[in-house]
Length: 225
Ligand SMILES: C[S@@+](CC[C@H](N)C(=O)[O-])C[C@H]1O[C@@H](n2cnc3c(N)ncnc32)[C@H](O)[C@@H]1O
Image (cartoon, rainbow, N blue to C red; front, side, top):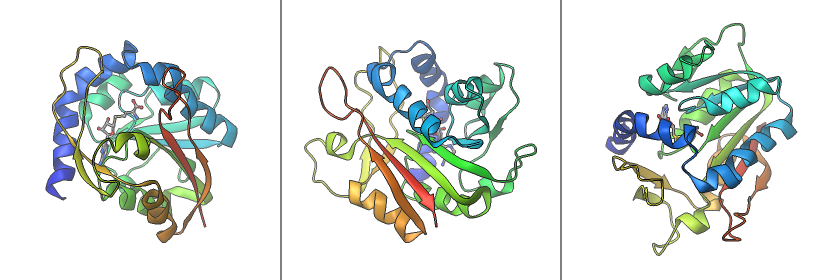
């Protein structure tokens, strides 16, 4: 694994408890006001019978979707995140890196109608690993829903081109996070990466933040060909 990709996982292991607090105490405005609803709405509109929440963190999205009657599992590389998720009483969580997804078992589900990645595609190779996992773990014409920072907003003053960046944790409550690298992609690069791997863009969504009137995130929905 590339050093930056390793560092992402090391940082999330350190940040697991803090991140859990941010999510469960609803400390991040943009999530509460916009992006949590945006991802739930995108899944509900797709009506998948089964989902895999990839990079599920402490598991809030799985719980939301189970409540709405969807069947699915959550996976995350960080054992502490998964332990927290399991602590809520449901067993449908697994510890796994994205690379090892095809090696895991998910109860009676052999293939999913959709993968969901909510702010969890952070590295350069992860796009490839998730697309690859879809070859065995997605039903024919399975979907991949990705919500991520909007490149036009996240780019800041730096050149609008792909490359490794350092996460800015500014504005996330009073929490101090361990710095983590993340891989910045332009909008067209997100689409090209999946097209190259036999997925086609079905839909692109740009939810607007009511306070800034700018996109709070971007969602890509890809379909396997
Ligand atoms: C920003 S958090 C988002 C968590 C959750 N999706 C949510 O909406 O709260 C990113 C998550 O992705 C996980 N993650 C990142 N890269 C990963 C990888 N290569 N394999 C497995 N999990 C990964 C991290 O451990 C972390 O829990």
